[in-house]
Image 1 (cartoon, rainbow, N blue to C red):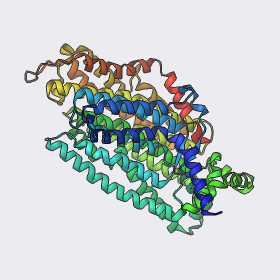
Image 2: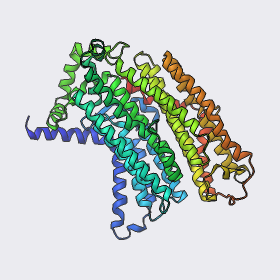
Image 3: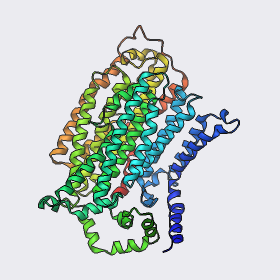
Image 4: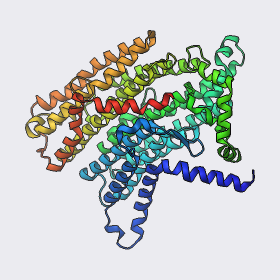
Length: 576
């Protein structure tokens, strides 16, 4: 094969396969470039950045939607793109729609609150869309290098957004803390990536799983041979988990979260608590199932285990032939079949991840709920609430991986519960932080004590805030009840002492969270209005936006079936 053939193969794969499936991300890139270039030309300063950002986000969302409608997600054809660096499947499609829906709502919010004014709007929207682009890459990452690239693309703009408010010392301090913690965890994660890739000889997630099968870790543990290899793999996995824990603000890598949330604007807090957490959870699923499961659909990607560009190009041109050999290879199929059993070569990898995730989730959830008690600032309280909910959602991943070795549909149901949780959490947290932002503009305060008696001056806002807080607890008939119930059901189905302990901890934490959520409700609905507070009046548009974002919290609690169906469809191809 000559050089021209190799180049033609790469171009064919990129232009005909990869780019058509990468259209939403390309639309975001085009929007960012357009916003940066529009003011270069005469008259460009008169074009509002808000219009460009909103139009670009809407176009990207339209491109992300399945052509036959949301009900056709199950018919999405899975494919690896860009020589296996990214993967397009139902989970990718779901997360794209989720992130881009949030981007549209977020752009409207920051325009209404004025945090992205005419002078700084171009910078703000560019950073926000750049971070969303990184999060889309995180959700579709299929290679350790794209995992690192996606996390950094999402993190670096977020550091700047945390300190975007000028003239506020707390805002600058929040950005600095966020950047310092992020730089440290990025270094640790990159070292863990180098350890894993060095031992396994590849950075491609499905190929790494097959290499783990070939190592036969159970035999290595029994015989005691190559114990150093197992130790390096465990250390690399822990270091990789550091980066994921930082994005999830999971204990013990949560220290940045309360300070950053208090110092940053409420709008940026909504961005970090919803979009950043959702992308990190999707990436956790990619890593957990990429290293703990060898799907049948991944047989043809064996050729992607080499990182040499020449080898990659040659495998693209011969993919069909190599896939045929892999399917015909009886021993390879036997290994893949055994990998799904409880005593498979991948069972130690799954047990390691389940124990780690279960312990981290329980500690994270408990710490977040207990630390929220003594908070007097509403943003700081919601920061600890975000930490606690990250713990609940990590529990779903732990249950799903635990059920993976048992077969059946339990693992798929647990993962669908996570996606349903993320969808409902978008409305709950975005609505909460939107109310905080609008009230901040109206009364120049973010202290919980200043929310006293809002039921009398802003009755609709008070009712919506109450509904959101009760939904965050997980009480029926509001939207937060169903995903939390399904997570508890997944833990019960997984069984075993560890999962039962996690189930009990989740139930106790739900009861604990009642206190600090309802304390805010009591302040809003029962306490008298403070004498030091300015008069509170909100215009039509803020109230209308809050109503649009918060109404699903009530409606989806009564009619959750449609979102539940989409979540079930979005996880089907993870297990194929």
